[in-house]
Image (cartoon, rainbow, N blue to C red; front, side):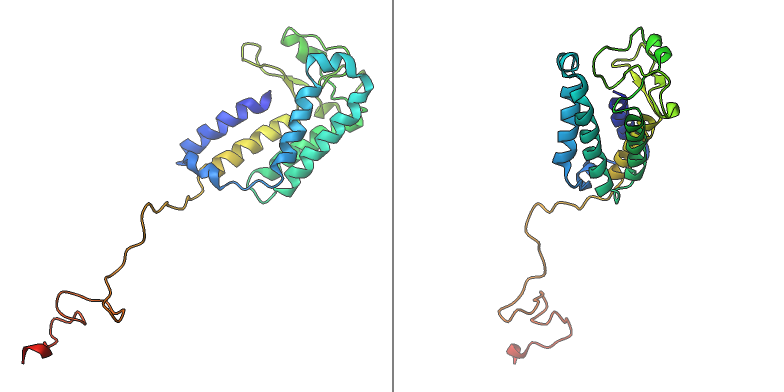
Length: 211
C-alpha cells in the first residue's frame, strides 16, 4: 500500500515543478500488460481467501510474478526514475528469495499497527532470524493513515522512483494539437503567391495591362 501514497505525491511534485497532467501522456511504457498482470496476480494471491488456502504453492507464484514485474521495469529503464524503481524491486526480490519465497515482517512494526503476522502464506510473514533483515518489512506507516501497512527499504525506493517518473513526465513538453487545416499564403493559378499589389506582390512593379 506504500505505492498508493507515491502516486499523489508524484502528481503534487509535478505541479510544484510547473508540470501538467497532459505530460503523462508522453510516457511510453513497454510491456505494460505483463506489469499489470504481475501486480494483479499478487493482489489475488494475498487476498485473505487465497492466503488461507494456498500454502507453499504461493512461493513460486510470488517469486515468478515479482520477477516478471522486475523484468518489465528493466525493459523501461530509459524512463527517468525507472532505475530507482528497479533498485527497489531488486531489493525486495533479494529479500524474498533469500528467505525462501517469503517477505519477513518485523513483529514490532506489525504491532505498532495493532496487527499480527498472518498465518498461512502472506506477503508479510514471520520468519525467525531472517536473511538480509535490513531489506525486509521493518518499517510501518502511521496507524492513522488509510491503508497503513509495513514496508521495506525496497518499497521506499520504489515509491521514490514512482514520484520521479510521474513528476518528470508531467514536465515533458506536449505537442500542441492543431484543430483546423494548416493555412498559408494564397496562391495563384500557377501556384505562386499573390498579393494585393500584383501578381508578384511588389508594389513598385508596373501594371502592364494599363498601357
